[in-house]
Length: 327
Image (cartoon, rainbow, N blue to C red; front, side, top):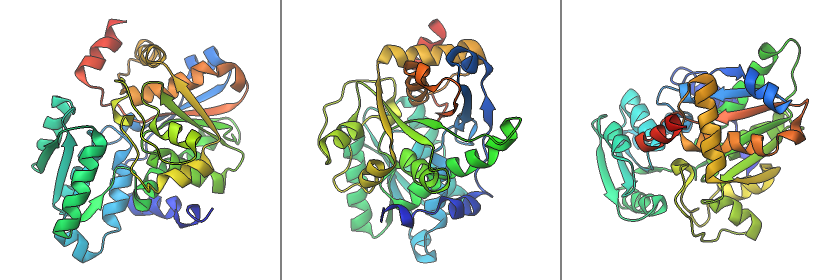
């Protein structure tokens, strides 16, 4: 438990509140009727940058010393984290340099570049971009802002759980205990922050980690009991793809907070995305479909229970948007 006692998402929530939106917790009538559960959607697609990543970036940058802030920061991302860090950097007057992998979608790259920051593309997968960014940060004496492998970033992502626990009593006729939350997992910062806060404040809540079958890096590490290299295939959940850094702080946290792991197919992910579009006219990114697909895959086990599905972002690439709308 030693890793968890250093995570204070309640304090992080107070710190970032002036800079980050409190996103809605919305009861989904159609999902509740379909599953038999009482289903709430936490709508991080309505965050300022279109994804939850703004929370971790805000907490990290607000935690820098004056000297660190003056020196500027370096980060790496497949899109959402870079956009979030650059956005917060601009708000706080902190210079930001971003590394991205060669597979980033042109629209995401253009969005990051539109903020007027220096962007470097790196051959290989997202992990290669992270390693290049970390190396430059060390050489230049600047702070590296990891997408997930940083306790302040993890704390920031955990502010989602702070909000959910505050919002649930208002979302139901009476006090509404949270039985389970479904979260798509990449590097583990999101589920680590959420799970750590819930373990402290809502111990009965089951934190369910959901992965695409094609890209289950952290889940495979959990099964192995150590960080291992995992061969991944293409997935529509591009923001959760990529390997886990050796020594990642998220790994021991994930071991402690994830109560259940699920893998979902590409077809299950696409079907969940299409259903959200048909029922609610929302186009969300692939990772959001992973969490929803996890609930739909095991819905019969949650009948009569209060569950949250984290809609982690709405920045769908154009080709995925076409697949969603094609039905």
